[in-house]
Length: 386
Image 1 (cartoon, helix red, strand yellow):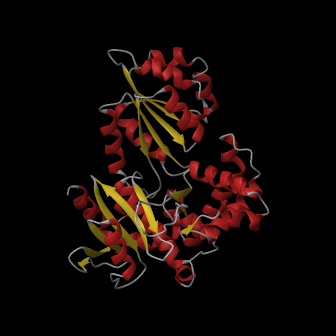
Image 2 (tube, rainbow, N blue to C red):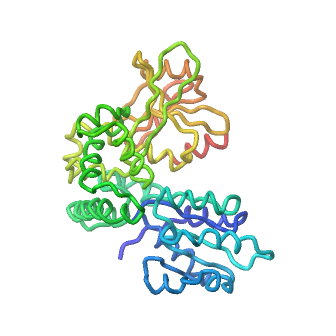
Image 3 (cartoon, one colour):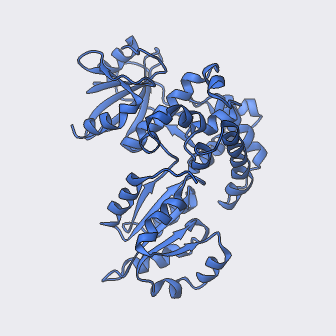
């Protein structure tokens, strides 16, 4: 069976355990959390509980009794299915000396995050996780990763058609089963219609009233739909950046599907040729490159900027107090645009980077450079170090 190693995530989990008794690995369904947890647990001979397994649920019927005697390492998969665990884990994490550490796995759930924040504040570290990225698959897999997305079974499928079939099944089971297990009571058909519509607005500024009119629903209802899908880590709201300058600025978020493969499936794109011919090609690349950057920089302090006069910046990232602007262009030879010049002057950018799908990285002037996406990890690391 084909596999892709994920050493950076394993190292991140280990690093977070150095200062925390509990680590929560949080991400969407089917992104590889269980496989990663087994890779972490096996050499440590960790006690493993899968709360989707009735036998393991029964083992935790009396959780304090079951967990108090365990030593060294404990892994609890799908932890959001048993929220009454969280207060008990707080007690177990406060023991001194500390006899055991706990790795929790959670499919992205607002209820899970609330339970963690209320019961385990100061004791838990969050490690976000999603599907594969280029640092894991290698640059030669760029086209497959972009078309199929990063979900392991989609990316590793034997053919594009098999990958499409997996994603279609994932969308159906996610809407009909998984969200209901998180307590979401919205009809799957309503969420599917909404998700399809937002796929066609991928990379656009959010307009709840317009989408609500198209769907025949109130703007508050479609905002709730968006919050559900963002809470499940399958969509992203990128907030706008605005400050006290003379230009009128957009103050609504942009919306993106976080996985390019799901986007393409909802748009009916089953091959790279179909993607290249589609009017959403540029928007698809923007979302794909955006997620690649945010995986490297973290989701914090990331924004877009757009003025009513038309000047815009795809992504503004703050790293150690410095401002970096990213333009995400599907172009062979990207150049500095007037809009980027305006953004640099108004936002006082320290550096501007234009991320493109080509192989070459080169300077454009003294403050801007074109970055081939394969060179992105090394370049972002260098920027982070100053």
